[in-house]
Image 1 (cartoon, rainbow, N blue to C red):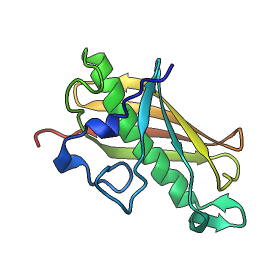
Image 2 (cartoon, rainbow, N blue to C red; image 1 turned 90 degrees about the vertical axis):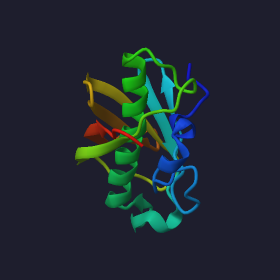
Image 3 (cartoon, rainbow, N blue to C red; image 1 turned 120 degrees about the horizontal axis):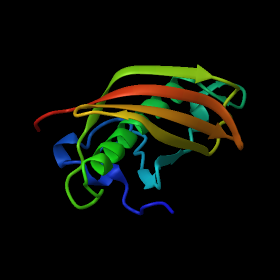
Image 4 (cartoon, rainbow, N blue to C red; image 1 turned 120 degrees about the vertical axis):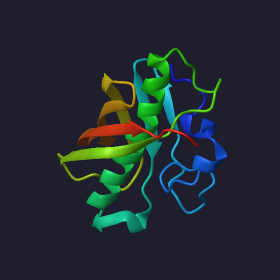
Length: 152
């Protein structure tokens, strides 16, 4: 079962302008990432102009959505590890320290499903692995080292 509050909807207003997940950025992706048991899930549909050629998504978009999904996932996992529930307090923001993407197969333009798992949770660092599915198949995987932003 997926929790019904997206972590991005609980970011403080001054941190809600990110291109990928900012609810105040009308030009961005406006991602919504939800906790689903031990995982974090995001759905996104690239626009037709996000093509890398033909019916496949551009590789930079794939890396970008994995990156943004990992930031939201890190917040969810860190909060759970520290006894917090999404929606009860403002969620912490995480930024990327390292991102690795493996492109397995062409990713179709259309609905994508991203599922993340925590590999490591520290005081400020969370390592997230992600599977990206398009057309029912895993088309890319990612590993992101995310760091919690202090202050703000």
